[in-house]
Image 1 (tube, rainbow, N blue to C red):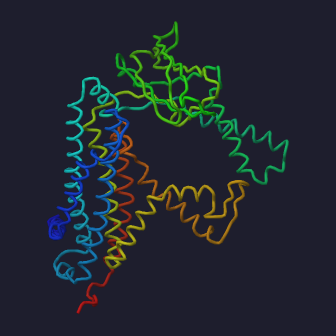
Image 2 (cartoon, rainbow, N blue to C red; image 1 turned 90 degrees about the vertical axis):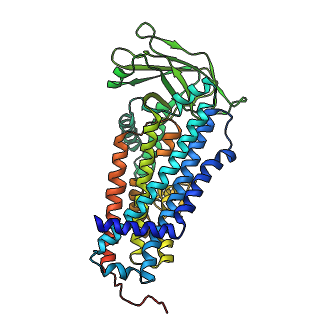
Length: 461
């Protein structure tokens, strides 16, 4: 451990010598202070705080990510190119200790920078919240600066798949030729079935039931929030649609009928639900009456959601920073692995290429779903095949699976919307990002570094 710490300290000295720590710290603090002056919001304290959290944490993650890759590539590659690594390698220090010591040094730098910037954002949020009117403070404490759990209606995927298979079987009996494009036919039928479960036609009432489960014991006398989102089949002259909501079952549970609400489509809306509107089994019943002249569609994924207070903002915020720290550990491993066998410019280029691929995961997902890079005709639904597809589509599929292991966590989105980041999610991030992805990448880097010849000429005069 003493040898690892010695290498880590040398990494700190290199960062301080090149002024990297000071420059990044200044940039991070400038982003925290400067962004509130530049961003535009909807004029509410809630909207400003959400945007502030999103922008500042995104900038902090981006700056830390780039500096981590730059330092990881530079600290090892330059030591090898400038023949400084030989002074360390001749000492009783194993190659793996050199590699791991540099990783520890980079991560301790990240920890310090993330703590400084994260604490600054937290202090800024608390300071601004304390200067708001009491009503605005209450809104922030219940909708943004809080850790809220989420409950949704029962998952209907099994029913949708079952109904789709039944319709597909009937379709094939009537038209056997549809087997030629069975995948496309099934996809279209599934979307039709799914729409039936999401659609609320005009002059009809739709009801959802949400089982609170064991959580109901902790929610007695506690207010809840209903979060909704819908899409409209047609546009409204005013841009909004009237919604009539009621929660509870008259005669069976306590009952709350809300006044008519003017709601915009394609956006999230939240409103408070009074306490104790669920029955003795913990079932909360929500009803919506569509009094508009057009059908409204509530997506199964995020159309209806009940939120409840699960904890405070401070600990939730720390868990979110913990997931960002896990991302930095993987970037450090990627940079050091690239520097284990490449020069500094090439290692930096390769690392940035990997980072670009991560940011392009949406494009990769489209390629994988369509099964081709450029030969998909959206009008006819016909997919062509080329030699490039045979090579790249399987590669993109594997790359997307790997990327999703790290990108399957969204701490910034959850923090800005007041969602809870449970300890289980932080633990899963540590296992998947640090131990699995970072561990495999680190083992590859250490294996390459162990076999690299350090005594060869480095091109210096």
